[in-house]
Length: 144
Image 1 (cartoon, rainbow, N blue to C red):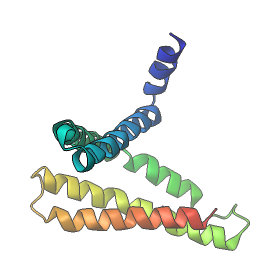
Image 2: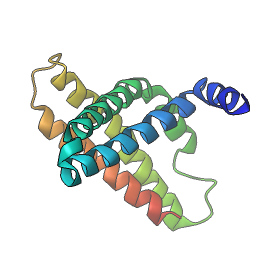
Image 3: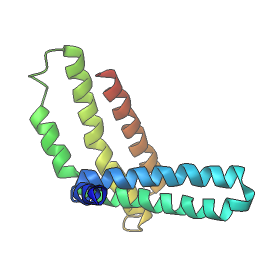
């Protein structure tokens, strides 16, 4: 009963829900991919798990439509990193914030194109948003 209470508590927050959705999505993708590739008798189950993973990923994209304000406030508060003592970390953090700030609108455009709200090539916008996300990850590693 304590575990259920802890789960319910975690799901009350955005971060808690995102972590659960992300974890379930990646687990479904891993198990589904293994079943499709390695177990032909279970490929239907694998295909369904891959479909579930895709829907969970889509859910996270939709939820990120509301992250812009929080990201903007974080970037504004960090500013040029005046409180950061290390110049390298400051520069990398500023670049990371810039990549993050650009990532969100690019992902939104890609999502809107997939949803037929905008008439643009979603593949280009997905590539750009994925590139910015990857850059942000690399910069995050470099700042550690």
